[in-house]
Amino acid sequence: MSIVIRDVQPKDKEWIMELNEVNVEVLSPLDDAKYQVFIDKSDMFLVAEVDGQPAGFLVVLREGVEEYKSENYIWFSNQYDKFLYVDRIVIDENFRRLGIGRKFYDRVYDRAREEGISTVTVEIDIIPYNEPSLKLHEAVGMKEVGQLVIRGGEVKVSLEAIELEL
Image 1: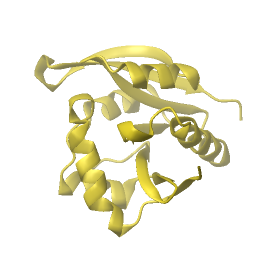
Image 2: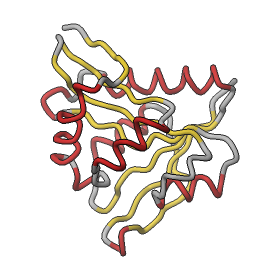
Image 3: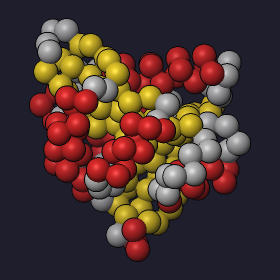
C-alpha cells in the first residue's frame, strides 16, 4: 500500500466537494465560494492518495484571512496572534485507520516549524459527537482550549490547540 500526500489539483474539486458532503454532519458545508477561498488563501490544501485513489484532504489557513468568516477561525483569531488553523481534515471512511491523519499532521507540524509558528489549532464537533476525529487529535497532541456553540445552537465544538517546540 502506497500513501502519497500531494497538493490539491483542479481535478480534485468534484471529489472533495462530494467527500465533504458525505461528512457534512461533522463539517461545515463547502460551496464553490468557500472552495475558492481555500484555493486562494489556504496555507496548505493537500490530498492523500492510497494506491493512486483519492482518500482524504486537508485544508489549513494562517491567521489574518479576513475573507474567511468561520466562527471557529474568528475565535482562534481573537486568542492567538500567529497560528495555523486546520479548517478540515476529511478521510474517506474506506481509508480510515491507515495513518493518513497522522501523515497530514506531520506535514502541518513541519510547516508550522518552517514558518516559525508554534501554535496549531483545530476544532472538532462534540455535538454531534465526532469520535474518530477526537481520537486522532488526541493522538497528535491536541488539547482543548475552549468550547463554542455555533450554527444557531445546532453544533458544539471543542476548540483545540498544540504548542510546538520551534
